View 1 (cartoon, rainbow, N blue to C red):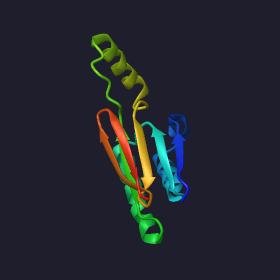
View 2 (cartoon, rainbow, N blue to C red):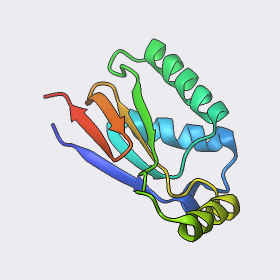
View 3 (spheres, rainbow, N blue to C red):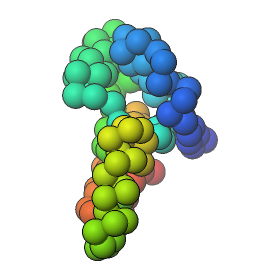
Length: 124
């Protein structure tokens, strides 16, 4: 089995409609790719992605669903000014410092996260 990891920068999906964004992601995962996305989907898009995954499961015997997790690395105490600067950057630029991992359930066994790391466990 060949493992494929695809990085999707924020700018590649930022201007797509929610429908097109979800469609693009589900198509890539359907091709057995693990996606590393810069940014975070909004809650409605996550729901739509899961619903589209369920539809695809009912239509395909080989597609078993998706595993999904978002991760924002936690910095140690930054101090007042650095923390304030990070807060302003988040207000202006959104969640680009967050990463989202989406993978097919046939490959990704489990995704574990804690404040400092994200672990991706794959099936053999």
